Figure (cartoon, rainbow, N blue to C red):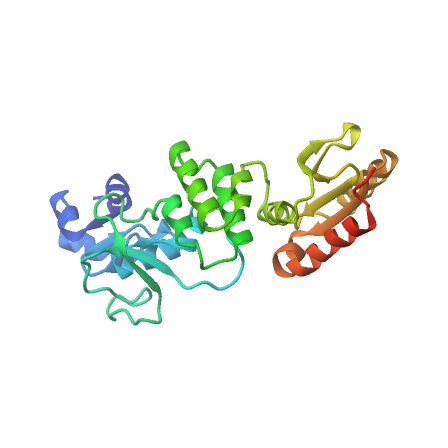
Length: 287
């Protein structure tokens, strides 16, 4: 029997009982585990080896990925840095195991457990993005939460009704900037800049097409361009030259350009904010 195909048909995870009911023998199960074709993640529970390390750890604990790790596993932008594994389990769960060793009981320091999960469904699927985003309220800064929310909107990870319900809650509990969140921002760094511009209260336009120059991330006021550059910028001579050409074209059109790297925006936000405020104080945004 092809246990890989069987587990795939069963959603990527199954109990011993489910596998035996499907025709698998105990011997075939032991052989598949020994060969690495499937993984015995905890007593009586098996998954495919490509399930993903964090999803596998959450399943080993006895639940699903939650919070930042749920968002990250879905490809939604999250901030850099070490975050504890977050797992959501049903309210009356017991016998939780260590995320790294199924024979050990869970120690309190190994992960953050939420006791409000639902039973049933795909055990490897993380919790819904709306619930994961709500868990960040009060735990991360407003601008970080704003960037996560915009990333979820851009990827259409939220249903329309739940997106608007969540938006209303975020406006009420976190701040008015969330009323202007959208799926327009193309990166977390761009969302972080947008949140700052909203809090400063200066007029701006986002993803603006400027003739032959092409699109720019922001036009602040009338004349100040602000760009949130990702790691790809300046990674080759051709890209460096294209960057300089765009800056030259912007100057010809009467715009001033402020380029801020994503790394700077995310790791040293005070410098990015100071650069924007200095431009505003000089009047660089005015015609």
